[in-house]
Length: 289
Image (cartoon, rainbow, N blue to C red; front, side):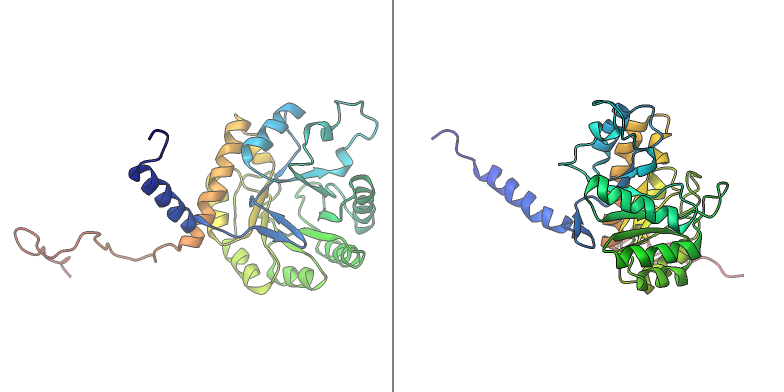
């Protein structure tokens, strides 16, 4: 009889199914939204919309953030950023980029809700144009108001653990501490603070901003954060499309490493092969002085 799988083929298929169970993971859940990918990607700074579209595809993301202030409502068909984003494939996360007070951030978030029909909001209230660090007082104020208005607020903040607690108490659906200043490419400068934030809040923690390459993303995910949001690291890379794929793989690698559990760090070596049965007897220990 032809066309029937042999025993070897069936064994291989069953083995693959059994092994895939070891790589299962929960979805990233923010409020009422579920995401398959733990990598969130921005849409700015690409050389053109076509490159942005291709980078999003290669990144594997299913959530993309758009600065509402960059949206040209008068653009002709085929010239708007939304002509290059498949809204059946991606969840749009509008952000309040380049708002420097609570009122302008609130106005931008409300405009996004009317324009896009979503309650999602990546809240950014910046303190100044040089550091682009968040203004803690205005950020907390805007978070409380937007949460009261029914927004799902994903809030960009510093890595201050106590501020993170206040933001979660104010109704934030996700806390997004900066790994380092926006676009700086310095990676996660204070991993201990990120760990503490994770312990203190019961909403997702997503590292936002400052990563420069795949190893930065992997390190962030190995800390146990729920996700990473980035833009410049892909868009400004020498080869953005290749970097998009690298960020996809780094997110997966870091997450799997966290779930697997790393071995403890030790001062001295620990041989992977047993010492018993070594020809010539046991080697001597390191001499003491």
